[in-house]
Image 1 (cartoon, rainbow, N blue to C red):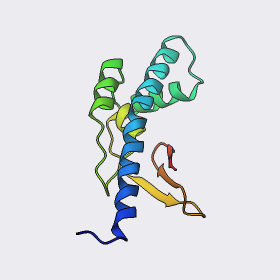
Image 2: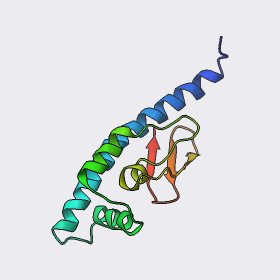
Image 3: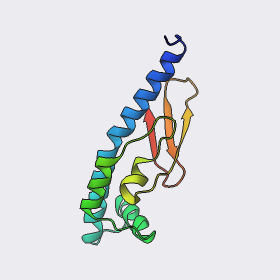
Image 4: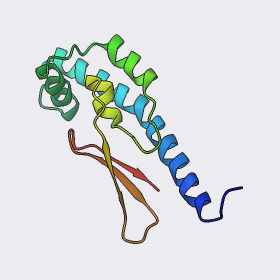
Length: 120
């Protein structure tokens, strides 16, 4: 039987995992917008810059590949990785978890791409 103090941490971990799983399809859409922006000559958008950065690292960024990576994104509790880095480049960049001052909200930040994911 689990102790009462373990329940909020378990609940927080489940909410964090659910929040990150919801982000993968959004990052897929962002990648598709970036691919289309680059194809249309709009290289100044943030999405297009993310695609260009991934291509600069030698990663092939196509709609099919980013869709495949978005579907396969699965964060592991305690070793959460960035959904944006995973979808765009297939990289497992660890997320830094920070609590807000009030303790009501947690923010997962990626040091590689700068992505921030709030977990209210």
